[in-house]
Image: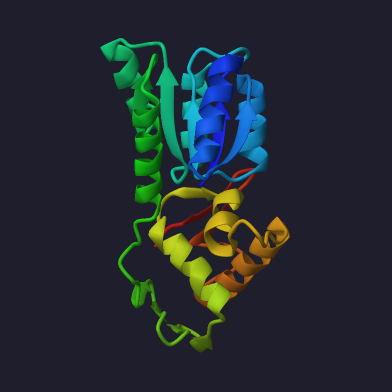
Length: 225
């Protein structure tokens, strides 16, 4: 997995990074809250290992900011704050797991890898989906719309699946690039904009006043079937 390790104590960070890499993961480091948010904005990660007591922006605020725009990336808080209320608040703000310091390295690696297994869970295969006057046949790569039948490219079908699996949620451009294109072949975000324009022509009654495919300025997109 690709992991962002956010920890300001250098000895703990080195130990965690060494063991994560020994376990086969790719690890980026951030030593404070600002650097963590910068790297989260610029790159895609499977898991974020997050300390709470950080310079500039604390871990709880980072967790909240990430969850405002990204429900996909897994977050495990690793903190010396061991109170019940600290754990409850961290989980309420969207963390997937919470481990207190000092911790056992084997348990830490096990928890991180368990989050990875949850990333690997595959949704039920989507064969057909209806919204409004539109029906998408994913197995046969076509859609029936108010304007007739439209053939879909494999990339269009994958992008539509991404929207349907995240329906009624705002999804970031970064999440779409990660889910549909993968890490290695990142197109320009303008490419996604062009796909959205096509979807509006295909499926909207009025492409200039979309009902289904919305652009959320500065963040990403939202599909409301």
